[in-house]
Length: 143
Image 1 (cartoon, rainbow, N blue to C red):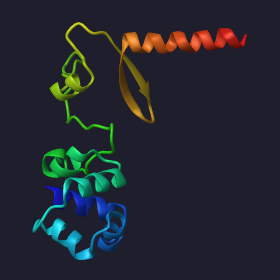
Image 2: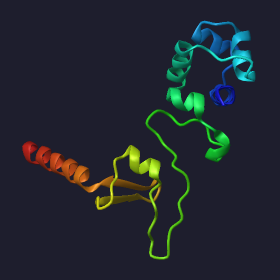
Image 3: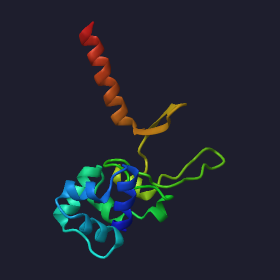
Image 4: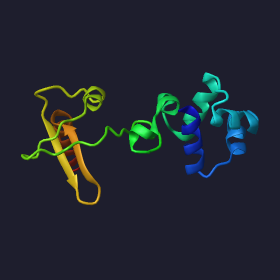
């Protein structure tokens, strides 16, 4: 997976193996071996590569594009949790990994935001209300 991810990231950024080798401080041949799966870099080199491409170390090493709709490892802090089906009454099931990462528990209230050009977004209602209160306070302070 590491080799495949490195190839995909390098190509999408229109870089050569030499470009990567320069950034990490190794030979082009070392990068070629990493991409072919003949060897893997040490953890420090992996961290440099992950930081360079702005992906997590875990995604650089473990992301499986075949099970992720063929997509690249996502940028740090971005997630693709999969596809959900909308039920007859408009309900969706939030994937377990998303619930874990965002600490969503049964009974939590969510705010759904929409932008016709961008899509839908979900926020915990208490965080949304806290943000709204900060905005209201700032407006009141300015007046």
